[in-house]
Length: 119
Image 1 (cartoon, rainbow, N blue to C red):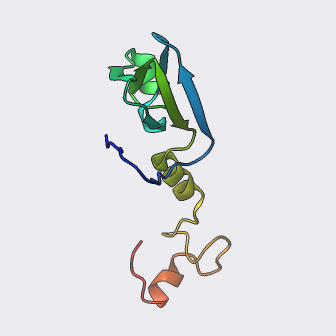
Image 2 (image 1 turned 135 degrees about the vertical axis):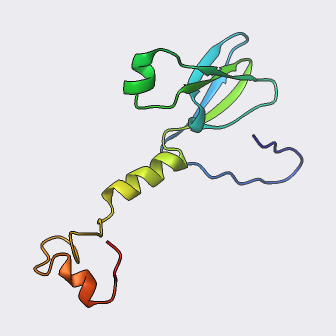
């Protein structure tokens, strides 16, 4: 966690859809820990274990939630860097035994011939 304060302009990097939520006194917001961009100093912040074997194995999200309690402003993002990186890697062309790309006539032999011996 980092703190920004003082006069002037600050820049923060975030991804996906950004949302600002104004929490009323006592209002609670539970979000994935990676989705928090920032919050004002009077917001109470805590981490809690999601729990349950189903959530842990089949949830598809992290094992922890951030609990934010108002009053104050909270800024969240829909696409944290870790998810962005995962999506980019999953859609990138895969090299390996498949050869020089999709539909390669040479297959794995193409890697050997061009000196790239990594399989």
